[in-house]
Image 1 (cartoon, rainbow, N blue to C red):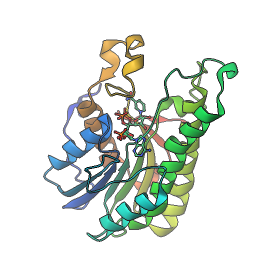
Image 2 (image 1 turned 135 degrees about the vertical axis):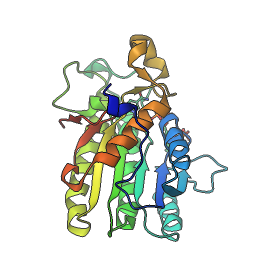
Image 3 (image 1 turned 180 degrees about the vertical axis):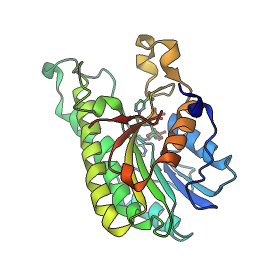
Length: 244
Ligand SMILES: NC(=O)c1ccc[n+]([C@@H]2O[C@H](COP(=O)([O-])OP(=O)(O)OC[C@H]3O[C@@H](n4cnc5c(N)ncnc54)[C@H](OP(=O)(O)O)[C@@H]3O)[C@@H](O)[C@H]2O)c1
C-alpha cells in the first residue's frame, strides 16, 4: 500500500458542505461509508438508505417506486455531491461450471447487482450538482472484469458485475453531456470483511482481507482524486484502474 493510501480523505475536490446519499447503508461497506462521511468535517449531510424496516430512507432494489421515493426525498434538500451504491449480492455456492447454471440464480444476480443499481442511476444522476464536481459511484468487483478473468467460474456474479460496469460506462457518456464536472464510475473495494465475503474468507490470505473502514477510506481517497477525465471506468480501492 502506498503512503498516500494511509491518509484520511479530505474530500477537498468537492464543494464544501457536501451532501451524500449512500444506498445500502445496512451493509458492511455501505455502513462504513456512512460512518466515514459522517465523521468528515467537509460533509454537511449523509443520507443512508437501506431496506431496513426502521430506516427513514427505506428502499428495495426490486421496487422502483421505493427508489424513486428516496431519490425525491433526497432531492428536496438540494443537489447531491456524492451518490454511492453499496448494495449487492453474492449468492451461496457460486457456480464452478456451466453445468451448475440456474436461471433463478442468474436472474437474481442481475436483478440485484445490475438492474437495481441502474434504477438508482435513473433516479439520481439527474440530482447531481452541476456547478462543481459531483460523483456517482457503484461498488462493482474486480471479478466482473472480462479482461482480468483468468480463473473463470462464479458465472452469475461475474456476469452481473460486468453488466453493471457496462451500464456505468453508458451512463458516464450520457452524464458528460449534462454535467461536464460529473464523474460516474464503478469501484472495486478489495476483499473486505463483510457478510458477503465471509463464506469465502478461508481462501483469502489475512493480509489481503481489509476492514470495511480501511477499504472505504481508500475508496473515498480514490474518488477525491478522480477528475471528469477518469469517468466511465472501474477503479480499485487503491486508485489503480482495472480494465473492463
Ligand atoms: N466484501 C467484499 O469482499 C467485496 C468484494 C468485491 C465487491 N464487493 C461488493 O461490495 C458491495 C457491498 O457488499 P458488502 O461486502 O458490503 O456486503 P453486505 O454487507 O452483504 O452488504 C450488501 C448490501 O446490499 C443490500 N441489499 C441486498 N439486496 C437488496 C435489496 N433487494 N434491496 C436493498 N438493498 C439490498 C443489503 O441490504 P440488507 O442489509 O437489507 O440485506 C446490504 O446493505 C456489493 O456490491 C459487493 O458485490 C464486496
